[in-house]
Amino acid sequence: MVVSEAPGIEFDAQLIQKYDRLGPRYTSYPTADRFDDSFGYRDYLQAVATLRTRGGRNPLSLYVHVPFCDTVCYYCACNKIITRNRDRAVTYLSYLKREIEMQGQLFFGINQVTQLHLGGGTPTYFSDSQMEDLLTHLRHSFQFAADDVGEYSIEVDPRTVTRERIHDLRRQGFNRISLGVQDFDPEVQKAVNRIQSESETLAIIEAARSVEFRSVSIDLIYGLPKQNVMTMQQTLTKVIRAHPDRISIYNYAHMPHAFKMQRRIAESDLPTAQSKLDMLSLCIRRLTDAGYVYIGMDHFALPTDDLAVAQRQGRLHRNFQGYSTHADSDLVSCGVSAISAVAATYSQNVKTLEAYYERLDKNELPVARGVKLTMDDVLRRMIIQMLMCNFELSISSIETAYPITFANYFAAELSVLQRFADDGLLTIDGEWLSVAPKGRLLIRNICMVFDCYLASNPAMKSEPLRYSKTI
Image (tube, rainbow, N blue to C red; front, top):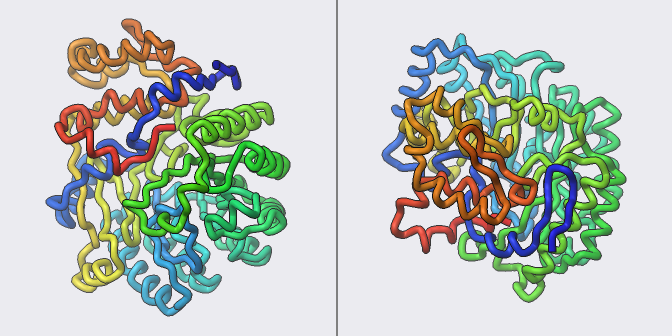
């Protein structure tokens, strides 16, 4: 069955079932599982030096990771620490400020920031005064663009903040806010240990709008225990009524072998594969009917939102926080497990608090692993970025930017893509590779064709267990 959902996207259940498999989300290329522990602190320093040598003057994007949560949500796959001991946040903040200061010194003179994102965990685990302290320290270490230019966002758990706290966050400089909702159904909430009323969520949205946050985003998940089409229908009605600027609808990836907390979810409560497809189809239809634009992957936005505008103008980018409007920014990340993208490198911090504190006590940035990109990596990253963000690729632009003949360099990939073309997922000619409306939901599958690490690894049949399903 093919259901036309919107001019830019079609839901074809048969093709989705045919191509549904495990694969990367491509928030980076190479993907984070390809990072190597031979890459360390000195390699990162060299990357920053390279940026300076090349006269880097592009603005920066900053990410700060706050790993703490009061309670555990069983579905969560984030790097988090569940604790009610607030003293741990005091210690962490003191070390986080050290890292921020070290990074600020490295980027002195090329340290203008136009994008900041606080993620977690729960960033508002920090108290109001601690958040004030953190932001003061960030502004001391980096030069921030004016409020009407920069995007300064924070993830918020509506259960843990008040209207007054939202007002304080705006006063402290945040102008975008993201709220975790997941599902409004009480039985679903019980099954994932996240009880959150509709009134709590709406109160936070209203508070954000009253102090002119420029964007309000809501996160939903389909495929959770106890979910079905009816519960999803009711949740969508409430979300659409709230009219957030952006909506993300993630596919729940049940991987109890990788995430211990997911073992608390009864697999018998999980919806069937067919039910998940029905829920996805419903989400696409309801949101596009409500006027939202399909950005890609699991993201929707109002036509006036910066993401939708950037996509129309060909400026959309994808990084570790998802889709972004800042394509020209190097990403500097601070905090445990945080990932930076500077020059032609990726680097990830250590994943435990103990290791994080130990590295900083040695006056070293806590880089644990990473990768230096080859020319082939950079080329394939550009192709994957173009496809993920724009659903099309100009072959001539690639040949202009790189010393290759596309048809020869990617002969093997084009042969595989022909099977996608035969199924109506894309079209290929001498100038363009264009993803068709029915191929957009399967964009991860299309991008996987250009992933040489998947194609060249003889163990790839067992490797995808680390990934989620593409749909």
